[in-house]
Each structure stands twice: as C-alpha cells, then as structure tokens.
Image (cartoon, rainbow, N blue to C red; front, side, top):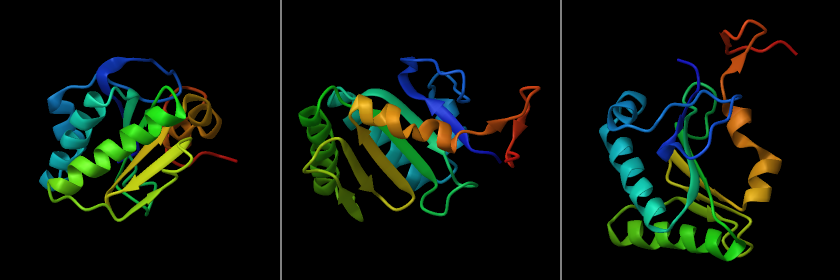
Amino acid sequence: MVSETQNLFNKQKNENVLERNFAEKNLEKLITEDSDRALVKRILELLEDAKAEEIVLIDVYESSNLADYLLICEGRSQLHCRGIAENVEYRLKHEGEIHLSIEGEHEGNWVLLDFGNIILHVFHPEIRKYYNLEDLYAPHKDKEGIKNTNPKK
C-alpha cells in the first residue's frame, strides 16, 4: 500500500497530493486499527473545535518507521498554533490519552505532538509551506501520472 493522503474537510486542493473528500467510510478504510481510528477521530474533533485550518491526514505506514499516520494542520498565528496544540494535549490528557512527546510548544511555528502511531503537526502557514510535508510523504507519480513508490533520482 502506498502512502495515502486524506484531505479533511475539503478546504484546499493540491494537485501534487492524492486527496479525497473526507468521509467516515474513507477514514475507516484508511485506518484499520480501531484504537488509532478512535484517536484520530477525537483529535479531528478537537482540531475543529480549536479552529485549525487545512487539516490533512497522511498514511505513512509503508514509508516511515516513525508513525503510521500524520495529521497536519495549521493555525493563523503562532499563538493560535500553540493554542491548538495545548487544547489537544490538555483535553486528551484528561480523557486518558497520553502523548509520548511534545516539541515546539514555546515557539509556536511548528508544534509536534507524538501519540506513538499518530503524529500531529500544527504549523504556522509559512512554515508549513517551507517544509511541505504533504509532498514529502505523498505517493510519487511518474510521467504518465501512475503512482510510483520508488521514484528515480
């Protein structure tokens, strides 16, 4: 299975990334493990509550040994990014979910919350454009537009 990207809430289209409209059945197809699916759903609810923007879910099971899924979103400012991350961390902690690590919460340009199989990235829009994780983890395409998991260098 190649890396698969799920554009959640259909806010923006990017031709370089395999994207689909968010639907419950797509999430169930993408995330097979019940505990991971439940955690992703809860994180998505919290991100929506915190007014996170441009939310994307990427299946990186085949292409990364760090996690199975990446959730990427952005806030409108450094303060908003910190607030999004703190809200997710605080609410999940009180619900019994424990994150392994949090990085970047003081600066607010890029906050990373590690939940083991799921990593949440909260970006400032300019930093997100610069690092462009969606393209980094997206399935590669050859000249005919066919998916190619082993791009030629």
